[in-house]
Amino acid sequence: MKPLTEQEIRTAFVNCTKGEAKRLAVPRDLAEQPWDDLDFLGWRDPQAPGRAYLATESDGRTVALALRLPATASWQLRRSMCSICMTTHTGGVSLMVAAKAGRAGQQGNSVGAYMCSDLACPLYVRGKGVEGVGARLPESLTVEEKIRRAVVNLAAFIAKVTA
Image (cartoon, rainbow, N blue to C red; front, side, top):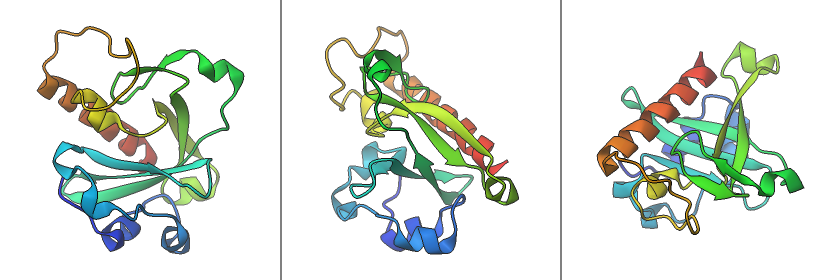
């Protein structure tokens, strides 16, 4: 993924208003991000635990999504699998909900996906994330195939948000 600037990220949001995009928390360490290992940049809002964001390239342009997630409940402490990168975590997967883009989102429509709570999917598929003991199930796929699968899964989620 090519490195993104704060301005590029803020203008790329498809499911929130320009004012909301202007006020949301963007990581201050953009220059230090491992851009070569990222298929998307995901982050949690440190001031609002129920908010998360991601930015990626889709069809040659940058697309960013505002996400909401529920507070951790006791039932979430069981092992769950991320629908993007297929990594399993104990208590580290959350239902991320995105308002749909456009009029549908203004009417309250949303879509969701179970995703790694820390949004570090690109690092997990490359074996560079620390997901805990036994979190990666054995697979015969190569790292490139796992990356491609995660990219396709994320693209399908983005397509649901922007449809």
